[in-house]
Every structure is written in C-alpha cells, then in structure tokens.
Length: 326
Image 1 (cartoon, one colour):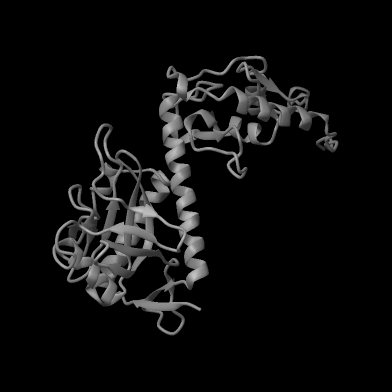
Image 2 (cartoon, rainbow, N blue to C red):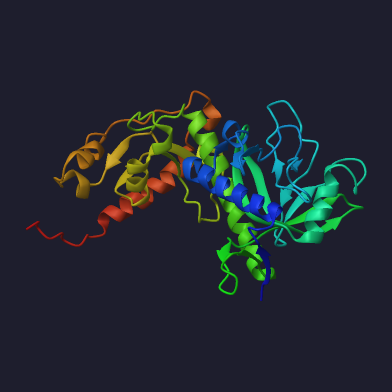
C-alpha cells in the first residue's frame, strides 16, 4: 500500500520541485554519488530566473521564489578538527533522523519542515559523503516531527512517474513501512560506499595502485574483504584504489594481490591473446602495488592473505573452454 501525492506542473511550487529534481538528476549523472558543492551552488534556471538548490550556511533551505515548504535539506561533513553540532543519522526504522535547528522548534528554518509535513511536498536531501561532496537523495518527505526531542523523520519516496489519469501531472509515491526501511537501507549503503570510495581514492592520491592511472572517474575503491561479508569494513585499510578494469579482474579472481603486495595474474589471462586491454592486465603480473604513505591507510595484510587464498582456490577450479573465434 502506498500514498500518492500529485505534482501538478501548473502549480508554481510543484513545478519548481520538479525542475529541482531534474537538476539533481543531471548532477547525479555527472558526478554519481559525489556531487561537489561547487556544482550544487550553481542552482538552476526556472521560468527565466536562477533558483538556488541549497545554501552553504543553512541546512534547511527554501529559496525566495518558493511559496511554502522547502526545496532541500543538507547534512554536512565537518571540517577536520571541527564538530558537527547536529546529530543527523540514518536509522533502521525506515527514516532518516534529521535534527531541527536549535531554538524554537516551530520557527526559523524549522517552520519550513512543518509546512512540508502539512503539504506532503517532496524535496532533495543533500547528504555529505566527504567534506564538500554530497549524495543527492530525492524525492524525500517529512512524515513526522518530534518537537520535544528535536528531530524530523525523513522518508525516501519513489521516483516520480506520469499519472495515467492525469498526464499533465507527475506522481511520486510514499511507500509503506517495509519499502521505506528498504529505501533507507539502500540509500545508507550507497552513502557508505561513496564515503569509502572518497577516503580510499584520497589515500592513493587519485591513482590506480596497479597501473598508476590518474583519471579519478575511472577509479574504484575495491574492497579487499568483499562488502557483502560480515567481517567487511569501511576502513581505508580494507580498500585499494584500482582502475575499473583491474577492479573487475580482482573481484572475478582473475587477478590477486599477495600479502607482500605483489600482483598475480591468473593463467587464464596470461594464456589469452585478445588485444590491448588484456595486455594491460598481463603486463602487471609480478609487479607490486603502490600504497599510501600513511601506514594506517595501507592494505591490511591479514585481509590480503585471506583474499589471496580465495584467488588461489579459484585457480584450481577448471574453467569452461572458450570457443575459437570464427
């Protein structure tokens, strides 16, 4: 069961929200889950006028062009040495716990949260994954506000779709409790992954540990202990910066890394001949990976040992013969 709220483009406020969501989607296409603040603060053009998406100083943001409610909320990553005075956090209860502004729970920016609750209007949640980098979560909705304890319940809704009964409108859905919990858990997972990637890539100076490739958008933070395993970790020492090609080979146990940081390429790849990409993997056989200068950020040797055992076991499994090309 879901509750549906129509977004009618003929209504100025709802049209503005739809335009803001389109801009968030464009930013996500450009930057994935690590949208830089410099891109967010550019805003977007709506009906010939520039509208801001968020505000650097305020977490709860309503642009002057918006009649009621808000356009976005923001959770920041405090700068090194500073403390975030708010305690926004993800919960397992199917919502994000978003702290009210200090002071009157019904005034200031908090007033816009109450309006969004009353009107059931959607908005964007910019959640920091690192200093100056944000994941855009939308459409979000306020489902409850706890004035005494000072927080609002923020739920992740379903993407907008065109209404069959009213093609001129866009409809977003507010899922029932089980779907809400799943949406928050999935969003939480992506937040952790984005934070993990940012921290690992920074530790490796935005370079592939094997090839030295310095193109950030072609790099991944590869988990040594796979993310799905219980004893995995989001610590940098459980990650290695790899190009997407090397990452896929590592995950597929076609490439292993020993506890003494040596790269071992599987015989399946070494014995194959199929162009430049394959050669790029073959040539790193017996090389050593580059590691961060900070010792705590270097790959955990025990995790590497366990992962290399998996790689070695995979080499004992016979592979299906590949057909010769015609």
